[in-house]
Image (cartoon, rainbow over all chains, first blue to last red; front, side, top):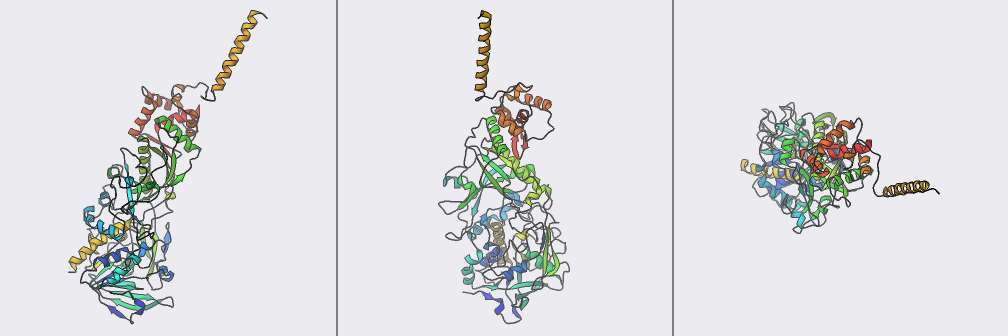
Length: 502
Length: 114
């Protein structure tokens, strides 16, 4: 059994020479380390923090932003990374999420969903979300009182989230805690805590990574011990913002930053806006089934919750992006709302005397936008690494696309005589407040080096031994929460690395 | 009392009773002054609620033109059929955020403006 090393305890100027260095001990880094645990490769897992939160380490994330949350909010510089505070919402990406859409610039992955499909069951097991029963008709219905709201023909359908559950009432799975013992058991994996990578040093021809510069935080507030890592191969798995930061800041050989020969690193940043109270849904027949407004645990342990998703046909026909609209809580109608319900129900010949209203929240997919961008500032952190600035923005079309989807949901509810809908948020500005903290797209994947930082395997274009893992490689984003999907993608990378490093 | 006065008194009393009954039934069925759109408004089961909804539709609203559209849409079919046709065709209008069939909105506006 290996143990967690602490970089602060290393002798000065230590040089580590693993086969593979993984930068970042979040869900991607831990997944990759675990999947390579059964190999003969010497794996070094470098985590900036420790096993518990340290505000000094967390402050290394601080930066500037406009139109977004503070950059040290929404991510955690601790073993397990973002899984230490995620909500456990899981849903695989749909086939359409991978498609290049003629009406959506920059969209499309370099492979289809089939490439990830074999990895989803293993990803589902790692997040401990129970049996794979997404969209299995009747799965939750059979285990709960109430039934799925009939929506009839149209652009939306009832889809399902499943939820990660670590154990007992600990929900969801926190990768650092959950897999600490597994990492220690893996004889070929060495997790190194308090180990910050401050630069990726390339060979003079910029074709390969020669070494990584590392440092610990010193007790004086600056850099502590310095160390060097000389791996055969590097996987950068530090998160959607930090991946770009480290590539941009490592600019001694490639002046624009590692892998940034086409000015793509840091661009295309995305998140999923998750505004609350986007709409009011009225159910004519009374209360909705409980799986709409809260999670329901099935007999087989799966935890599920319903959501309204656009069909792929609707997305293509109406040129809308992914969205997942979820029932939140019961609300009272005002006088206009009551008048709308009474008048419409009477016109349809429907009994709405027991009608019940609920607020809806949502998570939506943004269109790829090269101007939504992370850049380096002149301000530096305690280790001398330039801090980030994020230029955040949402296009009017991002708002109007989801508006079209909500309008269709309203039409469908009426057409199926089951309910009706009020759209609450009327302008794009209403959306710019709440975020999923899903950091996506900053090292996007594309077969063409002019359009992507990494190739279809996650290899940085032009550099033979540097890969990127995590949601920063998502070239377009989906409305599904990224964790399950980035883990599946990392498992795929793990299989690839087993081949190329054998 | 002359017979003519008795007859007049009976007629007056009858008229008063009729008016009273009419007002009494107003508790159950609201009575409205006649309008040029009564052939349309009669389709509404609850005209007061419709008027409350219709009041949220901003002016300008051309009553004559919209009434003609409604008459065309409701020709030879009941209100539910016209509304279902709106829904099938995607003829939807948003009023105060509510996603509504166009026919319901037009009727509601008429109810609010007369």
